[in-house]
Length: 265
Image (cartoon, rainbow, N blue to C red):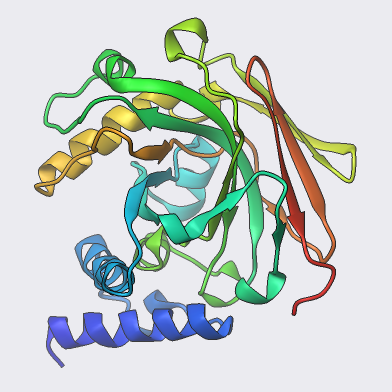
C-alpha cells in the first residue's frame, strides 16, 4: 500500500468514526511506522473534506502546550488542529451528546487575530501585536480513537482531538491583561472542580500563537486576520456525563457556560 492510499484509508476511518460516533482502534497500534508528517497529511484530507461539504476554516487550535501532556505523549513540542465554523456553539446552547464520541471539556482562552501572522521568526511579542483580543472559551475535545489511547500521531491525524468550541461574548485587548497570570475557575453544576492560569500553556498563551504561526509558516501557510486561535488548556481535561453543565469563569473576561443533553440522543 502506498503512503497516499494509507493516508486516505485512515482518513476515511476517522471520518466514519466522527459521523457514527463509534471510535476506531489506535492508528499507531496498527501502523507503528507512521510519523507526524503522515498524521498532518491524514488531518488535511478530512479538513479538505469538511471544506468541500461547505464548512469554512475560521482558525486553529494548539494542543499539547502543557508540560504534563507533552511528557504523557513523549513529545517536546505542541501540535495543532483546524477549527471550522461548524464546530462553534453559542454560549449556553444545549449540546447533543449523540454527535460526540467521548467528549471532555477544557477551559482556555480564545484569541481573535487582528492581522495576518506567519513565520518564520515570529516571537511572543510579535504574536501579541497581531492579536486583537482574548475571549473566554471552553473547548469540547473529543477523540475518535477508542478509550483516548492516543499517541502524537493518533491525535494529530484526528485533527488534534478537536470537537466543539464555546466562546463567551466579552473580549478584552491583550495589552490590558497579564496572560501568564490570568486565572480560570471551572465548575460543574456550580461546584468548583478545577482551576488554572495562563502560564500552564508554554509559560504564556501568546507564545503558543507564536509557535503556531512559525509552524504554519514552515508548511507554507499562516494565520489570517479574523482567525480564532485556541492556545491550549490550562487545566486537566474533564470527562462529560449526560446532563452536565459546566461554567468557566475567567479573571477580567467573565464566564462561559456549556450544557450537555441528558441522554446520548
